[in-house]
Amino acid sequence: MRARRTVTIAALAAVAVALCAYVVINKIGKDLPLTIATGRACVVNAGNAAVGTGGDAAEVELDTEQLANAATITAVGLTRKVPHRGLVVALATAWQESKLENLTGGDRDSIGLFQQRPSQGWGKPEQIADPRYAANAFFTALLKVKGWETMRVTDAAQQVQRSAHPEAYEKWTDESETMVKALSGEVTGAVACSVTEEASHGPEAVKSLGASLKLDWGSVKTTDVQNVVGVALKVNEAKSGWQYAHWLVAHAQDQGVKRVVYGDMQWTAASGAWAHVTERGGIDAGPGGERVVAEVY
Image (cartoon, rainbow, N blue to C red):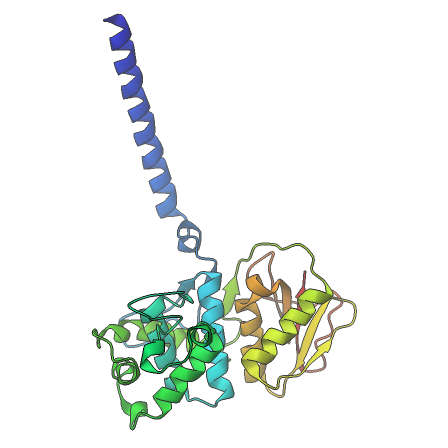
């Protein structure tokens, strides 16, 4: 009897400890910034308007994969000179269809960021699985829709997707507006990511980064950088400079980017944020900020 009582008391004590641990963890999780509590590594901030007020979402929080895919979709659209509205439609569609994740499957034979179906003529599975191909295919279809520019975001998206839930895209409009403002260079220092430090890759990382830039941006020209291992992109105006700078931060995790410098601002993987700097640690950004420079691990 005494043994049974001892086991019962021990069991109750274990339950009490577990409950206390749950309460503490739950409290800590609620008190921590959302980017930590949810594991989101990136924040895009392009305005102060609140969601649902008819303006932009004040902040959009994503993980590094989601942001990298959003940056690629936007870059593909910008190289095709797709208007701002079209970029918003594309991001809202990808938010709804895949949460900006390059899915390997979905409903029936759906694949990728936009859940496009090979059986519906979108391309071969391996093509649709490429975010750049998928984005190009979406923009091609959107631009064929008569009057899409004046439609609601959800209506324009529906003309392309033919979804069973035609209103679903509208709820991502605010977030997509914020993302497009940042990724198209309309605002500065608006994309911040905390990334995992990678082992040094040196010249191979530079080569990979240069190839990815050209895949997303087409004829963009990159050059080597003195004193650091990285690449530089020559720009003609601040807007295009911030397009590249934000793209580099968005792809920092998958491309091993350690630091990005543009004008008098610098982002580092260590801080995860942009800051004004006077000393660039050996990086020459050119007179008047003519170059965007990325240093890799």
